[in-house]
Each structure stands twice: as structure tokens, then as C-alpha cells.
Image (spheres, rainbow, N blue to C red):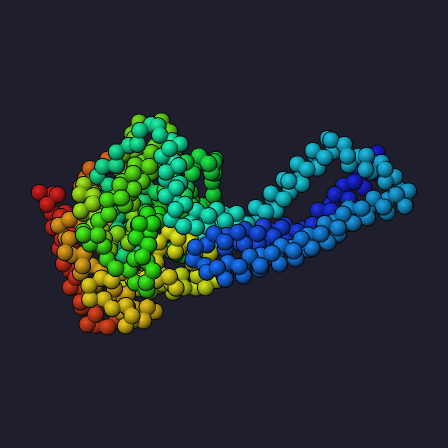
Length: 497
């Protein structure tokens, strides 16, 4: 009996080692990826019919080759398992029938399966801890990518998701989304840090990564996707700036809705600004209802707590191009604009532009993901907003002065709404985060809940090499910045008085 058990364990070990040595898991993963890629290509509204047909043919060939690869690996694993049994039988150590009888016992199958499962988990965890962390987008599995491509196969899908959620989840009544908060600036201006600092206010509801990819139906999608049981390990985001994210992290997905209602604005090499006359009643209604849906989703997620979420808050850098529209369509809104020193901001924009250019060249899904959620700030996807006096076609995006002039044009336009926006200086957020954020909370009518605001902001001075920029362009930027500093300090003085 003991010899039969020993031989059976050798057989199991041979089977597992053969599967591991032939990388059958990797082959199976590639097969799933190929099938999902083929279906995703058919759902990709950015591909032509010829490109879809070519992708489907390519996926078919990969499936056939993958099936053949699986077949010989499984045959080899079975041979590796049968060899110890055959040799033991020939040597008279243990009859083959006795070994098979042991292996077919229910208690043996359960114990060996549990041990094998535990061993695989331990090895996987060790290998994962030794592997450098990548950005969250590229860690999407083939199934995740398929679901994402399905959700973004066309604006009809996101609109339909919102309608289905409204019909299936009519109760409790949709909360009123009054006094929404829009955090906006050029990318790399500190909007994410400000959003995170506002996200922890007990009244505030924001988008989180948990809402992807059906961002227009957050309550319904969270229920279908497993609710709080669905999790993902904390990881660094694609920007490579040290900021870590998980499903609970606040993020910017509101631009998806603007893309649904104004698709033509995103088709060119640059994006026109929104004016007050561009207002669309249907879009405004959809967006206001979406704000209510986000508030409901966060309240459902929080469960029974003393303070209910009542204020929608978004971080959408693209809203810097539609200030007059927001002020007309949502007259009760508050617009918060973090302002960073122009040379530091331009340097960071250039660095991220180069970073995303590399990411998008290595992984096509990164490009698809960023385009779907409306992030056209960087890389091959870069589509600048047509701020006054800015001519993007005459400039090189891989030079510091491009981004400095972009900054100057953007904030020069924004200065026209100096009495309608709340300006936050990056220098103040770094030097005195508590006083600055408590002042913002007071202005917005929010309740500080004992937050340690220091955790959200860098404490080091925000410096850059001024020598990298054209002196004339830098002076123009500093003139605009000085005017914005005066506005920000004027607002702070009025609050003190």
C-alpha cells in the first residue's frame, strides 16, 4: 500500500512538472487571448471592415495552432504521469492496478488537489513578488479587455447601460445632484491629488476604478461584477509618478459622456472649445442624471453610514475647455482649478508625453483604453484644445516650449473666468496643505472629517530648470501666472475677512 501511494505521488508530480515545463498555462492564456482579441476586433468601432476581417482570420489561425500546441503538451504530461506507474509495475514494486486504485480514491483526490492548489498559489505569489510592477492598464487580462471593448464598442452601449440601470433599479429614488464640483486644469496640474483630498469628504461622491468599463451604469455594473467582493491589488498607475491605485481610487471617467454627445469634436487633430451657445439639453439631462447615479452608487457601496453622499465631484482635465458651457448648464456648480508654476507644469507635461508615447507604442490596448475614456493629453493620442492664440500644427510636441506655450494659452483663456473659478496654487498645497484644503472645504460647504491632508501632496518645492525654455515664452507664462496668483490670494484674503 505504501509503495502504491509513493508511486502515485511520483505520477502526479510527473504530470504537474510536465505541464509546468511545457508552459501549458501560458499556451492556454494565449488561446483565450486570441479568441477574445478576434471578438474584440469585431466590436472595435475604430477599425475598418478590412481590418476587422484580417484580425478575425489572424485569430482563427492562432486558435488552430494553439489547439495543436495544447494537444501535444497534454499527451506529454499523461506520458510523464504514466511512466512511473509502468516502471514500478515492470520492476514488481507495485502493480499498476493498485496504483490506479489509490489515485481514484476520493480522499486521495481531495488531499492531492488541495496540496497542488496551495503549491501553485505559493509559487505564483512568489513569482509575482519578484516581478516589477507595471501600470494598471497593461495588467488587463484578455477577458477584461474583451469586456472593455464591448462596453466601448459604440456610444449606444453606454447609453443603453444607463437606461437599463434606470429601469432595473428605480428604487430608492434618484438622489438630487445639486452643487456639483468640477476639478479641472491641464493634466499634471495636481487635479488628481485635489480629487483624492475631496474624495474623502463624507458628503462627496466620485467616480472610482470600480465603475469601469460600464461607467454610465455604476450601480448595476457593480452588482453584476461582484460588488465589494471584486478586488484588485494596489498598483502604480501608468503615469509612473509613484501614485498607487486600486478599485476604490477616485478617477476621471466623466469625459466618456462628453464623447458620447459630441463625437465629432474628437475626430480631428485638435479639439475645439465649448462655448455657452453649444449647450445641449439632452446632454445636460443625461449628465445630471449620471451625477445622481454616481451618488447612489457610492451610497450603496458605503452601506448604512451616518453621513450620506450628496455632492458629485469630478476630476476632468478636459473641462478646462468648456468653462462657459459648465457655468450656463450647471449654474449651481463650483469649479476648482489647481494652478502649478508654468515651467514645472510644462516640464511634467513633456515628460508624460514622452512616457505615454513609449507605452502606446508597446501596447495597443493602452492606446485603445486611453482613447475610450477620452484621455487625449499625451502620446500618439495627443489632441490639444484650441485655446486662443495657440497653433499646435506649427510646434513640436517633444519640446519644452510647446507645452509652455500650451500652458500660457490655456490659463490666459481661463483668466477670463477668474471670478467664477476657485484657484488653488500648487505651491500653497505643498507648503500648507491643511490650511489650503480646509479653506477649500469651507468655500465648497464640505465638512472636514479629520483628514490628514499632508498625505495627498508633495512637500518639496515645485522647481524646474528655467534655462530649458525660450525666455520670451517663459516671461509670457509668468505674467499669466502672476495674475492667477493674485486671484488665488485675493480669494483667500476675502475668506479671512
